[in-house]
Image 1 (spheres, helix red, strand yellow):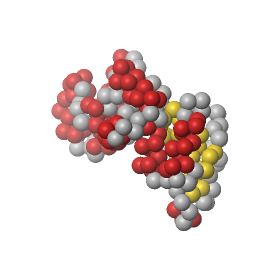
Image 2 (cartoon, rainbow, N blue to C red):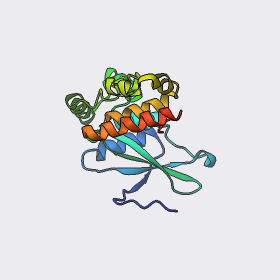
Image 3 (cartoon, helix red, strand yellow):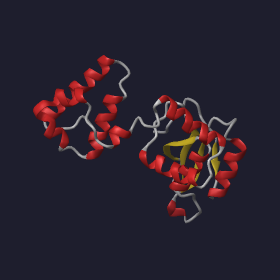
Image 4 (cartoon, rainbow, N blue to C red):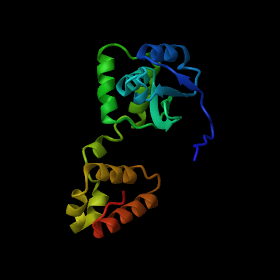
Length: 190
């Protein structure tokens, strides 16, 4: 089944970090995003490493997201300007620190960081990454705490994010109840 986008973005083939950098220099302010077309490794044709793509995005205040296979030879990575409510992962913060120390951040990249620090999204994942269980979840788990702790770090992070990202108190309570019910059955909700 083909993926149908509600707001299709252009597909642009760029084969080097330099080409991506130049495209972002020219377009990062006005453009709403695009699919970075990459040759699949089986073709033997040049492609940009994931780390290079992410670093270029950070420099200009952009972010990578969805991967889509276009055909047997090409896939795409969706790149868009970072939204103010976008969370910052630990690996991206480490990359950002290196880019900042090297003086490579552009004004749009600096602004994206400032906005995230001001609205709390820069540190939103810190407790999740550290696997800190919030008090209300720990209390609800009670004797099932060791069961929850026995799940893989990835599963626990998903559950912790799910709880923390709830917008309403009732949603948070419902999510906690589902996590506890799953733990009582010896399984993760994810």
